[in-house]
Length: 217
Ligand SMILES: [Zn+2]
Ligand SMILES: [Zn+2]
Ligand SMILES: [Zn+2]
Image (cartoon, rainbow, N blue to C red; front, side, top):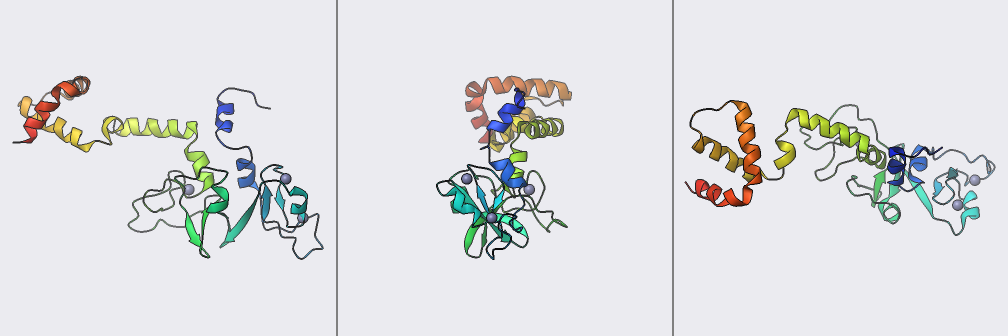
């Protein structure tokens, strides 16, 4: 099966149970215990990875790490205090449902984007609160995969090569603009500007005091 190469690296990034868990269908009648009232399958064994389990099935997984799936308007969620013990959920938006903090397993199609939304899931573009990157565990798997990030990097290189270098430092950018204006009165062709910026970046420690001087005008 595992042919080696980049696929292996991709699969090792996550615990082996995660992808099977996200594909599983929960809240179905247990085939083994169809005659029981408590046979709705809402548990998953992280050690056996053998599908959705009902509370009777769970008797066979006593010392195993089992996790309970809950429902919020027909979508599967897991309580944060259960999943964060076994998985890094940073970047995934959490929600308070029935006074418990939960994360969604998979993305939920959003009929239309909310108005005035500034932050969206990097994968499915569902609107999110600021500071979160993904709407669900499923979107985090996709969004942090190397193939997805390569695609994103390529897109941002096309749209703005400058941003990928200095997006975190708008002051540095401002400095550059001021310097370009004050040192080159005649408008140079775009290629020479790029050359200058590239060169200047190498000499940042040397040039920094001058940048400060320019700012004091
Ligand atoms: Zn088990
Ligand atoms: Zn069962
Ligand atoms: Zn999403």
